[in-house]
Image 1 (cartoon, one colour):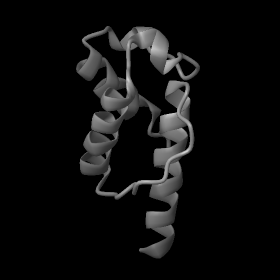
Image 2 (cartoon, helix red, strand yellow; image 1 turned 90 degrees about the horizontal axis):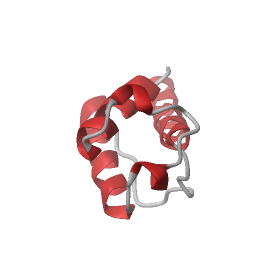
Image 3 (cartoon, helix red, strand yellow; image 1 turned 120 degrees about the vertical axis):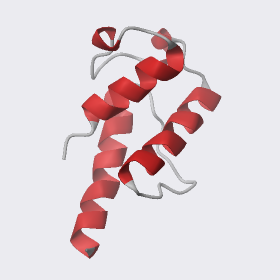
Length: 81
């Protein structure tokens, strides 16, 4: 699964930036995302994909880091289905 398009769409909406300006290696900080924004995005992604990420998260620096984390949870969900 490639969750990047959904991550980019939700992040663009949250930060009020153009979706096409968000690339996989775009730094979250460069977009103006702070830790609260990232937490809210994770909640939105949990709802969107029907997953629970939990409290332990690796350091998220670029947008692809979030997509990779979501893809990992989706793969685990599919394996347990």
